[in-house]
Amino acid sequence: MEMVLFPGDDDTSSPDVSWSYNGFAIFRRWLAQVEGFALDEMHGFGGQRPWDEILTPLAPLLNHPDGDGPDLTASECAAILPRLREIADKAEGGSTDPLFRRHIAAARQLVVVLQLCIEKDVDLLFG
Image (cartoon, rainbow, N blue to C red; front, side, top):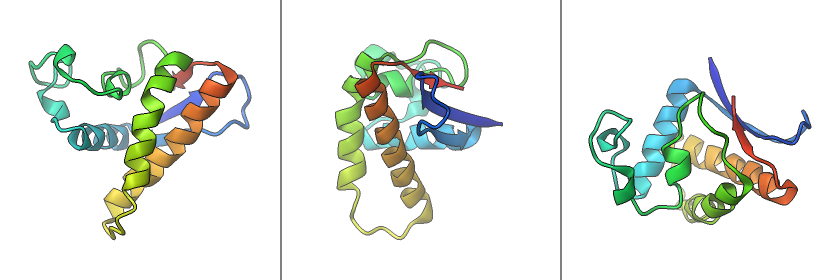
């Protein structure tokens, strides 16, 4: 099965970003690690730590059910975008680690999708 994040603009040619469900989980664990915490310690991910203790604009993306749950609004996308772009841009360190490079490529694709959601004022859909 595949997890796809895409703009809710009804345009099938719009960009999207996709992972296997396991790949999406690994991507989110990596983002959480970049933000200084372990996703596995969070409520809803096997731990007890409440989300209101986490101060990152990425929280709506990180604390989202895989396939179900509400879409992210254009406003939420606008809040997430600058931090995600910062992570993707500063990661130019020349790492040759293939997993790291995949995470950066996915982050950059997601930046494009979030930007489109903001520009068109549409939700980010999880499917």
